[in-house]
Length: 192
Image 1: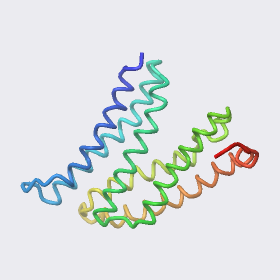
Image 2: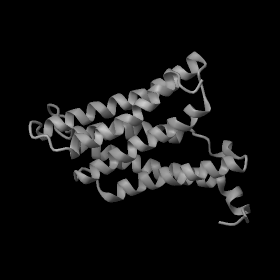
Image 3: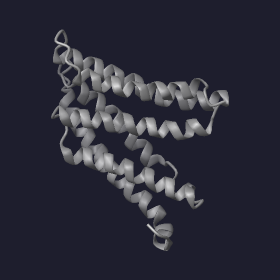
Image 4: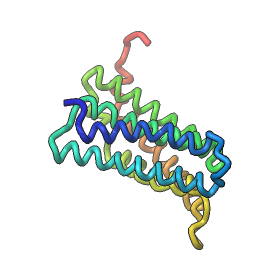
């Protein structure tokens, strides 16, 4: 069954994305910047939790589906990419970081799709480097969305360092996946 609890959680994550955008783009004079930052941070954290929860539930309940396997990474990438574009618009990250992370997501998604079409998807399956990169991103982005200090903890400062680390990890993991796919890439003589 395509519509089960894990897939509904994934759809919820996708539907949270326009809400995240609306927090900053829809004029609502009663909200100050701090309130917008807080709501955006909570939305992002809740959506991120569903990323872990939907996979865990799918395995635990034996409800893994092809739709879920397709939607889950799409939802993850959309959430991260939209958050990065919002942070770029707010001036909280620089364009180079956003370009590296978003460019990698597009490149590796396309590479995995192509590798699956030739029956070699396992050579570019998610590994520990990709998981570490994702974890660092998912910690950095809420700090950058919240932006304000929490006591003596400077969210913007530490979030900036972490998103820079995530960009470095992103580049390294992209190089790793491209290296894994290189034999198939080199041997492809098909039309473009």
